[in-house]
Image 1 (tube, rainbow, N blue to C red):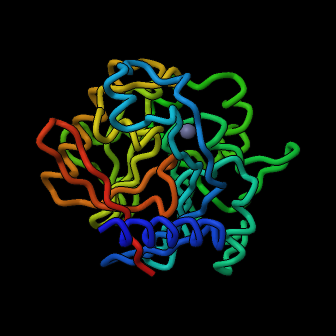
Image 2 (cartoon, rainbow, N blue to C red; image 1 turned 30 degrees about the horizontal axis):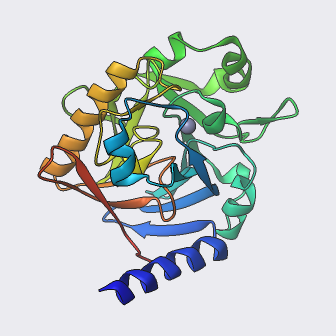
Image 3 (cartoon, protein in one colour; image 1 turned 60 degrees about the vertical axis):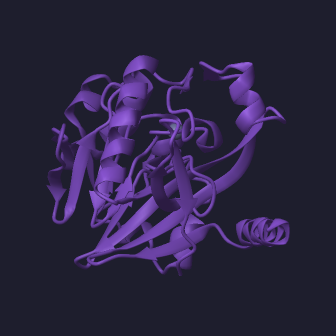
Length: 271
Ligand SMILES: [Zn+2]
């Protein structure tokens, strides 16, 4: 058993350094991971930790993290979900033969800098043909610095109301669901059996087994916890898969509940 774990861990490490992208195919779409990079974070920004939790899941007082965006290819369209910091994004897209002009739609989970960093560079709109979709609530709560960026897309901006208890259509086969709390209008997107949940979690190693742990980046930590529990339950009940903007490589996996009221994330290694 020990040997198998070691080999699995080694494979993961090798894959991480070898590539930033990962392609997941489902019924109507191909979803491609566009990773901005992997990192190790300390526990300083987490809310609700106890010595028992730390001893259980983060004895070295760190956790692995990442920043990701995703490309959905469906119905002949190229649809970005967030744009990360905009550092590796353009190289990653290029690796799949996609230029910025090829992007038809950008869906935003929320307006934090690590999600809208690729929209505008040095005052220039990077995706000249893309329409920008975001929830009405997120737009209404936008900071001045975020507005400055998204206003480059104001002529092609679509504000929508995400589904609350059941997903609502956003575009073609893509649906949305409100996950408010991390930001006022934080939204998850669903294509086929995959939920792209934005920042529903930041510290997978801690927040899956202990979903009541919040983070100081949450605008409303209590609401973020409620949304996390609701969405994780929804995913388990409907046997969906999950992808997230801060899930370490390969950032896509399945979710199961455990006996302690928490959840387990099992990464997928599909090509
Ligand atoms: Zn984020």
